Every structure is written in C-alpha cells, then in structure tokens.
Image (cartoon, rainbow, N blue to C red; front, side, top):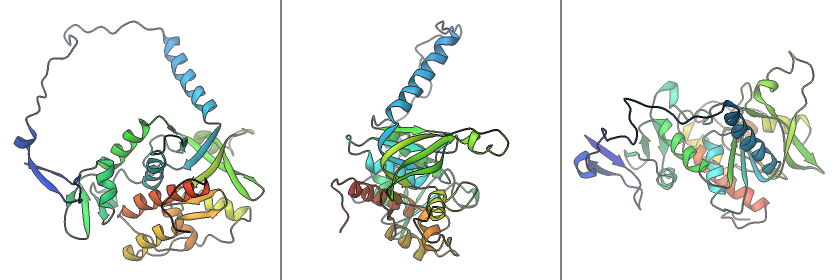
Length: 308
C-alpha cells in the first residue's frame, strides 16, 4: 500500500511506501491502567464554571474585532486561515451550524473525494493536506473531510482566531453607508422567532465583515440578500446553470469588497453576480477565501497582494 503526499515545493505528488514511512505501533502501553481506571474527582459545578467563564470571556473579547467572517465553509475557513497569518489581526468566525465546514465534508452527491483544480493544489500543500496528483489539470483529496478537518484544527490553534458555533448573523450593523459589524443570535433562537415572543439579538462590531454564507438556501446568501433589502445593492439575480470552467474563474475574479466594510467570497459571489454554479470542485472556494482575506487587508489599510 502506498501513501501519496502532495506537500512538496513544486506541488508534485510523492509516492511513499508504508515501510519507508516506518511502522506505527498502534498497541502502545497507555499511561493509565485500563483494567482498573478511575478518573480524578470533579465537581459538576466546576465543569459548568469552566465552560461558562471561557465562553463568556470570548464574547467579551470579541464584542469588538478586526474581521468577522460569516460562515465557516471552505471559503470562510480559507479566508480566516489567510487573515490569521498576521498575529495582530483578531479574526472572529461565526457559523450558524453546530458543525463548521459547510458543504466541504463530502464531495459531490455525497461521495467522498474532493476535486481541486490547479493551481488550487498549492493551497492544499500550504495547509498540509495530502492529495493525489492526477494530471496537469487537477488533484484529488481522498476525502473532503481531510481538507476540512485539517484546516479547521490548525486554524483553531491560532491564538488570534475564535470560532462561535451555532451562532447566526441575523443582520448587519451599518453606519454612514459602511458595514460595521454583525447582529447575532443563537441559531435556534433565529429559527424560532415566529414561534416565540421577542428575543432580542446581540452584536459584534468589526472593522471589516467577510460574508461567506454560500449559495441560496434556508440561510444562504444572507449577506447579499440583506444588502439588497436595505438598498446598498440593487439586485441578487442568483447563480445560473453549471459551467465549471467559467464558474471557478469568475468566483475568484469577482471576490471583492462589494460595499464599504463588507467583502463577499465563495458561492455568495455567484448569487450576487449571476455566475454559473461550479458543482463539486473546490479550488475556487479556497482561493476565493484567500483573495477575500486580502480584500479585507486592503480595507483595513494593511499590506496585501491585490492591485489597485
């Protein structure tokens, strides 16, 4: 059996046998006795205090932030990854689902593999995701979850990143025509406004908001749809029929600061611009997210790779 790793300087794959990698001893001796195991004692109240104190501390720390990324799908995570390379930028990611990752846990039609067209393989190599280099046009990650779990775990270890799960962006903060943050609520509350009495939201102020809420759906394309409703953009025509070649190039090319203080990325770009849908290829999501980070850096007045 061979393992393929694409993390080389030129992005080419290297086939390495299991023997070359070295045998992995899966039956090591644990540092505890599995035949007579007893956990250290704890008070139930201590568990509650630790969770509450840390979470509420995060809410206090992120009530004002540099960049809010709405949506922790492949584009949002890639954007946060790129932004977080600057340790002086505080990145706050909010995800309406309990489980971040969006549609990037599986490939198309619930299949496992993730197809990434070149030059997107360079981003995979940077993140540390192994892939099969199939030909001059594309690579394949054996399971989409390998990308999502890798970037998510490494991103969350960075001290300047906080992810709030099960938190919805109900609205935007807008001041003098500039987006200045997000209005938040627990997702379960957002979904039940019509069944309960008034449940007011909370807010996170931000210097820049990156909206990566995906294509239209129950909570999709919510950023641009809200911009349309409040008159900051004219129309959201929605994505058109699938054309992978046109779609991926167009999504990256049109990733931009659409109104002052708000950058759009990923499939939300297709919804706003009427671009084709791209189907089960993911390179545009990653590189659109990376470009969105540089759009945010530009809006912050910081060094970026974009041309004027």
